Image (cartoon, rainbow, N blue to C red; front, top):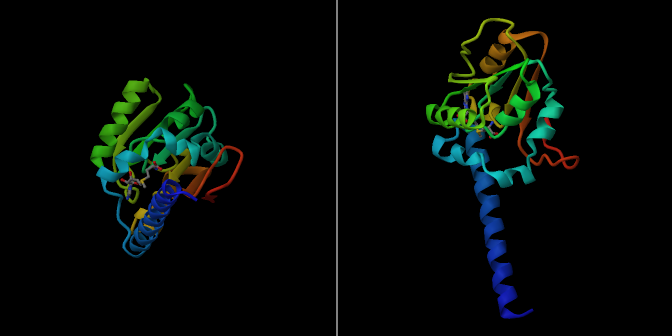
Length: 187
Ligand SMILES: C[S@@+](CC[C@H](N)C(=O)[O-])C[C@H]1O[C@@H](n2cnc3c(N)ncnc32)[C@H](O)[C@@H]1O
């Protein structure tokens, strides 16, 4: 192996090690002390290469998002999943998005306007105190959100309150969700 290959391999090993360290420490800290991802970090969640490891079409197909449904996306952040969810519910459905971080809702609204998604409404709100009536939604989905909420039971109770009887609550925690391939964890 020549010196250049050794340097490249060394750099890759350092990058991988750094990624694993940050993920492990970050996840441990947030498990012990749940808090919303800072908006400045969360705004970067909407980057195109993320599709390589998390395909919104696969996640939302599994979640059961279908045409004509009234759907709530909790904690959408800047809206990585939102266009696909809007496309799936179609013109006869509605998608509501609620996030606790005002800057992220600002970004999401700009994206919704830019893409002309006229079946989507987005607002600031807390998963533990949702601004909706009982039995409003056919389906609620959360992606990488539940772990950030200190009162998870309260959030699940609120989701149950605004779900129609027989509705679906889909919770996905990110690992890898590839098209037709490796799976994340969802329940
Ligand atoms: C890790 S980000 C995931 C964003 C998006 N679901 C995605 O996968 O790209 C978690 C999001 O949940 C939001 N969030 C955290 N706690 C929340 C709460 N109590 N109510 C509503 N949204 C919350 C954060 O502001 C953030 O946008």
